[in-house]
Image (tube, rainbow, N blue to C red; front, side, top):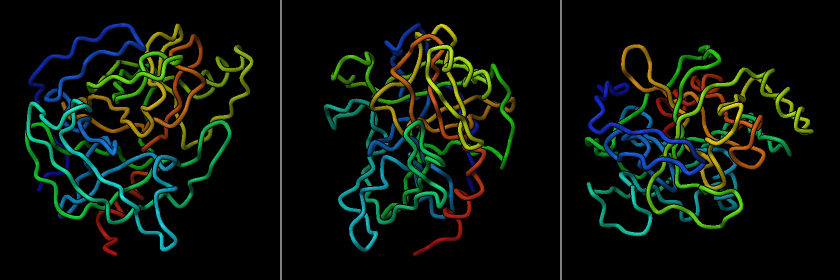
Length: 265
């Protein structure tokens, strides 16, 4: 039984300053290389689940609440080819569970998370493994070093997207400080308990358009990686005093576990 992986890094990831994010190793973070772009595998009995941002999938169902043409690609690295360094797996999404408290907001959506049920089990491999979930209400202190990944824009003013999976290092920002920084920039941001901020005071490193649903992850003391956030929104990208806004997974981890373990419809 695999709850989450004590995964030894096979390739060192050198971090650099950017939204010009660093090229992530497909072997270094094997729960990142998934797209629907879905971003990481969740462990459950039968390993048939994945997680994503609620606002990314809430409109992808028909009148009967069934998914419409949603697929998950596991082991994805280069978006422009199926000839990946390691074998890719494709799965069809058979059910989308959006968090019951999900609500659209002009600033940042509330409880912006969803769980996707797949048509068949995932075959774990060195580049496709589960990531840990935090405990319910688990505290993450300000300054905690984390990493966010995805195929989003490297320049907020450009429509171009990278073909390779990217990653960048950020730090967790305390909620009140995040609000104050935004207000210093004339942005009236209100953070709720299900939201969190991560980035840098000076900007330069951030998630961006197209990264929504991506994982915000940190390495625990026991060496395992934990999914602490989900890319939700932000005001531009990598601007000073405007860190990214994420769904706080510790506020929904109990719901995610319930869905993956007990809901079988």
